[in-house]
Length: 91
Image (cartoon, rainbow, N blue to C red; front, side, top):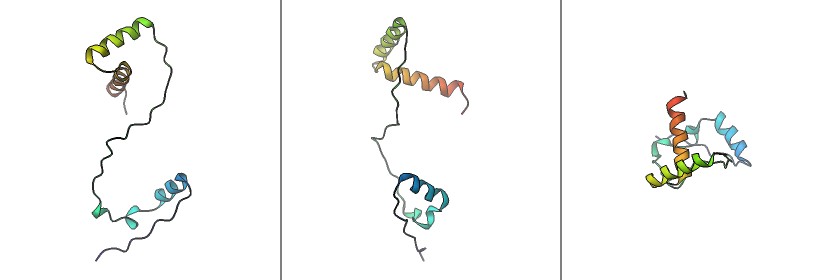
C-alpha cells in the first residue's frame, strides 16, 4: 500500500520555498521510488566577469599555448586556475 502524499504549498518567492524544504521532509510530498535520473546537458556553472591585468608577454605566452592546444585562451586560464586550486588547496 502506497503512502498518501501531501501537496506542497504555493510559494511566493524562492526564499520562501527554500525555507519550506529546509524544514520539511520531501518524502512526505514526493514518491522517490518513482524518481528517474535527469540530464541537463546545457546547464553551465554560474560565472562572473572579472577584469584581470596581465603583462602583455604573459598573455601572449598563454595565447600561444592555447593555440597549440586548440582551445580559447580564456578557457585555458580557467582550466589552469581550477587545476591549481584542486591540487594545492584543501577543500
